[in-house]
Length: 90
Image (cartoon, rainbow, N blue to C red; front, side):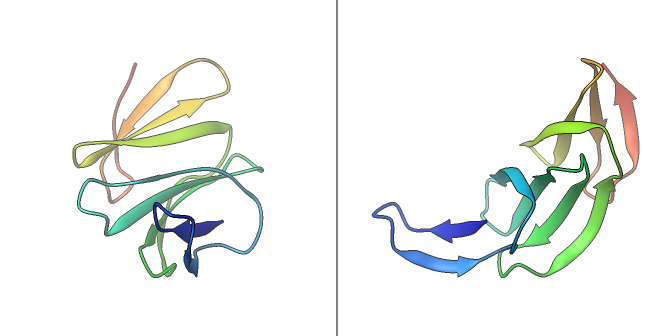
């Protein structure tokens, strides 16, 4: 996965392999990455791993304000804090 400017110029690589989806937060400092194995990780804008948000069965993840919405392969959505703590399941 690569972070690029709007004109397509490469800024930096965030993750070398396995990423199927990524979303950057509003201030551009954190990126949530969904991997092909269903794991969701939180990374800094420079690519450094902050923490794992969800271990398995995830299909996508997005920021919603400071919370992270994690879509699961069973059709449910988990609302999680940036520290990975589950708030609720929708």
